[in-house]
Amino acid sequence: MKNIAVYPGTFDPVTNGHIDIIERGLQIFDEVIVAVAVSTDKQTLFPVEERIEMINSATEGLKNLRVESFDGLLIDFVKDVQAKAIIRGLRAVSDFEYEFQMAVTNRKLLKEVDTIFLMSTVKYSYLSSSIVKEVAKYGGDIEGMVPALVSKKLKEIYGTNKGGE
Ligand code: COA
Image 1: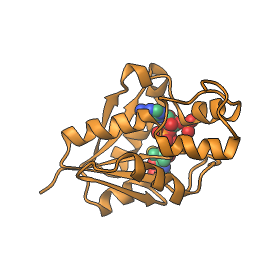
Image 2 (image 1 turned 120 degrees about the vertical axis):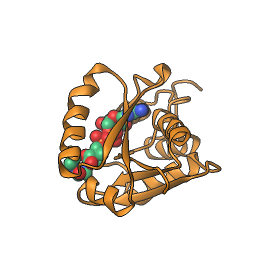
Image 3 (image 1 turned 135 degrees about the vertical axis):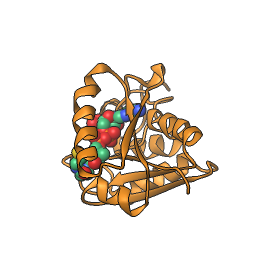
């Protein structure tokens, strides 16, 4: 039986930090399913279809990877796809409390599933989707922070990138 892991998030939008976690997850598991949350507490900039499109474009060529949307409880999705683990990235100590709470709750809801934490690569440890959107909004340079299609879409929304060009 395949060792499948689910990597969930809002991905609004996906960043190079997320891609790093996806690539490293693929080295550990037979298959990784990126699960894009349809409804979250967050007011998203991109509709779910576009968030999926951006992940697909950035991961083209990666084998054993699927990108899907999910609505409702994460654990129901995990059960449906018969995954054994949830992957989450940890960037700093500040992520820990929230992640700990989610991991324990998910394990309470489905005891067969564990959450595996991957430490963010240092150069991405400061990144978040909100930071990227804020930099793009005020015309800063987002080069190196996000995949090409994300950069293109953010520039379309916020106008030309002034910071590094
Ligand atoms: N590199 C860059 N940024 C990263 C990162 C990394 N390696 N890891 C996390 N982040 C950022 C994200 O970009 C995001 O930034 P933002 O807050 O500016 O948008 C933030 O850290 C964390 O968000 P994300 O990883 O997208 O997760 P999330 O907290 O938005 O997603 C869900 C949470 C969707 C997984 C969770 O709410 C969920 O499972 N919801 C379904 C309902 C459910 O089951 N609830 C019970 C759970 S206990």
